[in-house]
Image (cartoon, one colour):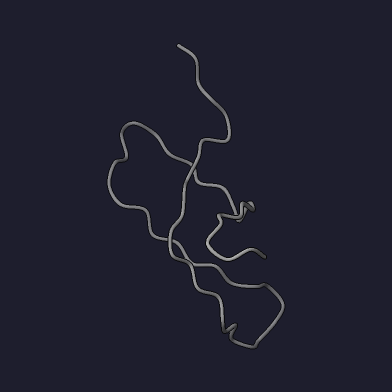
Length: 55
């Protein structure tokens, strides 16, 4: 993986509505494994819409 470049991978879905505003908190973990993961450093994220709503 090239250093200093963004990589993109899907990690889940959020459901949002105009009535619910505020901060988003999330965690990333692996199902089915009882061992803690180490060595992953996340310096930033981009949350993008899965579908665009046209009005």
